Structure formats: C-alpha cells, structure tokens
Length: 172
Image (cartoon, rainbow, N blue to C red; front, side):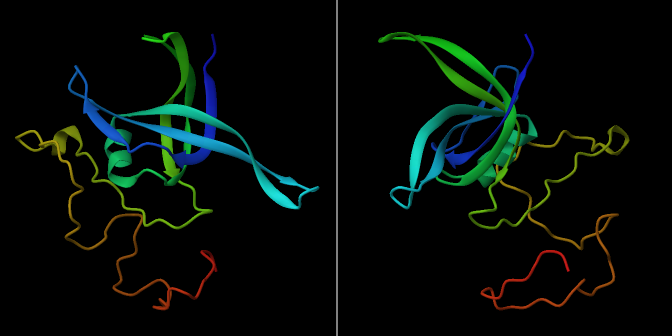
C-alpha cells in the first residue's frame, strides 16, 4: 500500500513529551488539532468546522528539536506520513490517526520565530575520542558566526531598527 503524505496546519494540543525507546533512541509525541474555518455569508462571520485530531511522533534529531521548541497551544505546520494505529481499551477496540513527522515548524501567520541551528555532528574523521553525552538543553553559542552561510566582515548586512513596532519586509 502506498504511503499517505500529509501536511497539517494546526495547534499543538498536548505538551510534547520525549521518551527513550528500547534501541536507545528518542521519540517525542504530541497531539495536533486542526480546525477548518469558513466565512458564513449569511451571518457575516467566520465559523469553525470539524476538527481533525492526530497524534504526532517525531524521531531522531527532530525529536529533540521539537521538545526544545514547542509548547501546548503553539501554531505549527507538520509534514509527514499518515497512518492508522489500532488499539484495544476498556471501551473496546478503536483506531486513531497518527503522523510520523518528517518536518515540524512554526506557522508564521500567527507570530515569528528566531531560528537557531543545532550543532553539526562531526564527520567520522573529526569525531572526538570520547562519545558525546546526550544533552537536554541546546549548547550555548559562544563564538563568531563562520562558514559558507555567513559573512564575516564585522558589519551588519543592513541597519537594524531597534523599534519592534516598525515592520520591515524580510527581503529588500
């Protein structure tokens, strides 16, 4: 059966929780709620439609980044593979939708974000003698920005306006 790719725009409906799995890796789980909205011309107002609920699971590096970045209520965009998980409970058998996330990010229609890259994993020939410890907090930034993505000339690319109320376009 082919995979069902899905993009869901909604809100984080439960606090992301990170767990260690048997193979030593990590998974982060949360619920997402996405409610359709439409404009009712008769009432001249926006009305809510049905709400789509789904569990979201995030593996690998995405797991740590999600638990560091998201909270209940945040507006997000989730891209991943949709599948149905069957379960049995006191109330009988049931099923729920689940998304194995490939990417999760903020929905910038509702706010802004300050992106911070995660530390890059060293190449095997650069690997330290001792394995790196698993960290729960992002490493603090303690040096100048260098590399092909940054211009290292000491000056800003464009002047910075300290007034947060003044909106400027991202691209000039």
